[in-house]
Figure 1: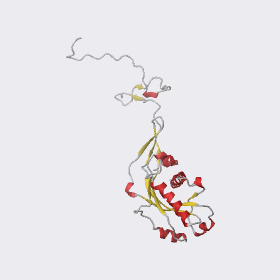
Figure 2: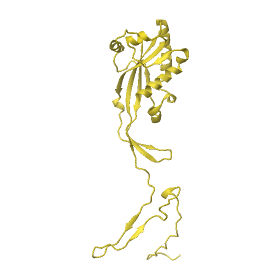
Figure 3: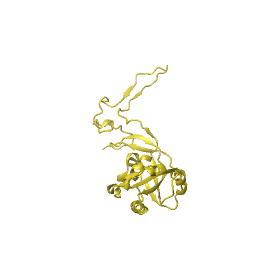
Figure 4: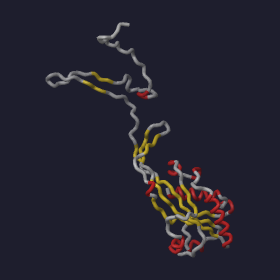
Length: 235
């Protein structure tokens, strides 16, 4: 799921026209050595914190169906995680960096969720909204100054971006649908306990249920005559 969020965020920033104007969008850690090797204008989205949102943890199981409507698996509910990114702009001049950062901010604040068209893998399969919070005041994550200190770099302007994404639950395959009819054997017992020959109840032509299986319509013979009970009126 993490790499799918990375890809969705990278695609969203790419739609802002950054790549078209020659700006790289990377996910690297902006360390001092990395900054020294950088040569082109760059926007860096560094993932530095991952936490579960325990308030959204569910229970029970969900059902997964195939295209024909058959139950094929049971899946535990997804668990939600908050991924926090440090987004920075890198150029030769501070003015150019601020211009890039402004372009990124304009793109991100226009979306409360990652657009569904940008989601891949399990995120696209689940069909759930992936929340996006840009430069929010309630980001429960390490402060930007602490992150820069840990990276060994100098503090610079940055955006805190938090993504709330679901992690697909574990799936267990369900038993295949029944394709053979029910067969019942009944027998009476004699006084000595030995069973007498009974009747075997089954579908006719059980080896070939047809295209619709045993649930499809079947020809029925005439109903047996109803036994007249005392008190029934003559027609």
